[in-house]
Length: 385
Image (cartoon, rainbow, N blue to C red; front, side, top):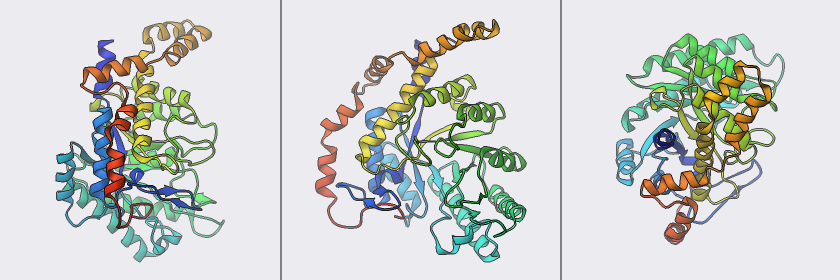
């Protein structure tokens, strides 16, 4: 049990700045009270999640949504709050120029503009101390014959190579993939294999990030995780949950058993070791749920799945597997999943000087009432800001 607690204490889960702003569906963005109006207030809210969970010490930024005049000052502000700047997320999908793609656009001018933005994000990494750049491209085509599929891959590779060369010592980029949307006929980075192939060609500073909502129904995500870990190419996760497509719901909400299976492969493959460099990041849109409690609950969901994964009796499982004992092996697996780990985690938090129930502790803190009263006027943060 001591080893399990040590592993859980070492786990870090990064929250995204955009989850603290207003969000919604493609039909409507819903406003809530107390929502941050700038990146500084977003960091203050993220610091609350870390204060109550103890395992969310970094915050991912999204550029230009989190653009500021002085990034070094923003990083100092984060440190003063007890958190740090995590991954820098680029945005090459919200500009009119990108209607036909960004780095794969037929226009050389547009490709240059998009690549320059990615290079700007590396500059921001330098200023904030971030070591990770996250790349997601909405690039693709809607109709057969609209553009040449192979040429688009060539353009993608050219841009990625330029960004890769710009990375400094100890820096990396994570390449994200998505099955479809907003491109409906062919997406330029549609799956883990495409992302993996580009990253292998580039070298060790390029790794794949797995967004758990970006797969076709029935896809075995835990197999992808196991494969990428085996190859040293799993850079991290964008944790969320889905019922239909890229729903971006709270992680573990739709299928907590899948989250457990994923975390078991992470544990099995050594991905929980900080030296493995696997970033556990949330990527969620809290449309109807309160922002800060939604993040706290999500962090707890990942932590609970991790605790269950650590409880799997690996020796008993290996023995059953080697003997071909199908039911016995499955029973070992299910015993761990069916264990109630909440008392263990409550004990772990108390040992760390935290309240055993983070959700209740936040509710008692009065922080929401404070920001709801103070954050009146100005423009609330949301999609695109």
